[in-house]
Image (tube, rainbow, N blue to C red):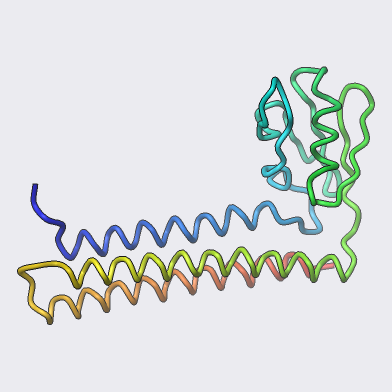
Length: 186
């Protein structure tokens, strides 16, 4: 087995950084904005059949209107459990259950709640930035340990990794700006 080359280290760093950026974008999707989106309930876990399961594995979630989500459990016996899980989530939603389907009206966000959500977005973003920086640090330490390569090549490769790092951080920042604008939009 050949030892990893400098290009392998760069490729690995790029994959790690891309994963971090994707994770941030996925987490942003779960943060509520003014419009209804089914991704809002992605992190809600329902107590079903003796396990905690994601809501989308026990019910179909839809957004028929901009200010309304509907949840229809495939098994009617889970209606109460789904309703309880939504209430227990820290989304601040009030589901109503008609025995068939759960309707979740999305109240308009007040200024204070918007600011809280922006803070949550910034926390997710910072976690993403830390992951990107960590990938860079790991890659640079692997590059430095690479044998049979000139110092110039190592320095050049480190610059490539730094460039990847800067690009990924810019992507995170752009995602933050977009999400923040979406949240603050009245």
